[in-house]
Length: 150
Image 1: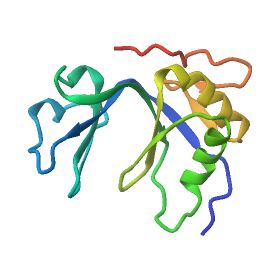
Image 2: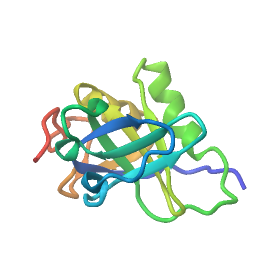
Image 3: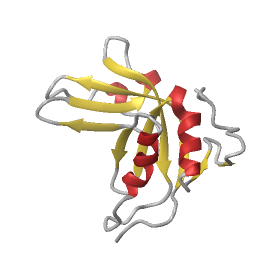
């Protein structure tokens, strides 16, 4: 089933880091809390996405990311969800880190690109709510700034 209509996304409060730990690393205590956190273990690495403020300094991490969550549960039979979000962002030269859960998808963009990413997504026909839940319009990105609330 092809995805047709625009999606609603919501800016997730806070700043995030994408961390790399050695192969087979145990789950560190600092990743066990937060509004969004994800751990991926592979044969090559252990990757963690979590609140930037929780990551200890010596951990290899790329910091300064903000997250946009697709609102609602997505049917596994839908196709084109991530494409409808990433294609306009790629055309605008905005880098992303995609993260999927059982129910939905998340896009992480660098904090400095958040306002531009929101504008691109609005022009692509999607709806965006700021981190307080207010609808963002294309005449201004109030409530979606390059600074976080933490």
